[in-house]
Image (cartoon, rainbow, N blue to C red; front, top):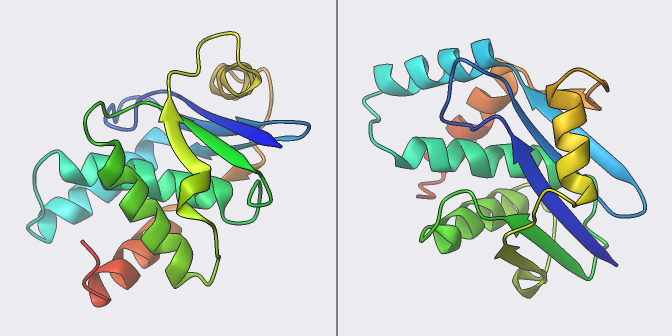
Length: 157
C-alpha cells in the first residue's frame, strides 16, 4: 500500500495555518494553526535558535504528528517535496522522532517526490485548509514544544 503526503499552507508562512494530510484507502489531516506556528517560532528564537532549519524541523514535526499513529503499515510513504535539496535532513529528523517515540519504520519506505494537484493527499489537505472539511487533529503549541524539548534533551540535530 502506498501513502502520499502533502501540505497546504507553507510551514514557514506564519500568517496562515498549515495542513498536512495523507491519503491511501483512508485519509487523515492535521492542522497547525497560524498562531501556534508564530508562538513556536517566537519561543525558538527566545532560545537562541535562528535560521531556516527550524522551519524545516517544524515541517518534520508536523510529519511526525501526521504519521506516528497512521500510515506506518504502508509499503511506501511518498512525501511531497517542500524543501528541495534538504530531503535527507527532513527524513532524518522525522526518523529520529519516530524512533524516540518507539515507532519503528523502515527508512527505505519513506521517499520524496512531487505529488501533484491530482493526488488525494493534496485534495484532502486543501479541503481542510479551505475549511471544507475538519482536520482530524489540531496540533497545540505545548505538543510541539514538548517534542522540541525532547529532541533537544537527546541532542538530536
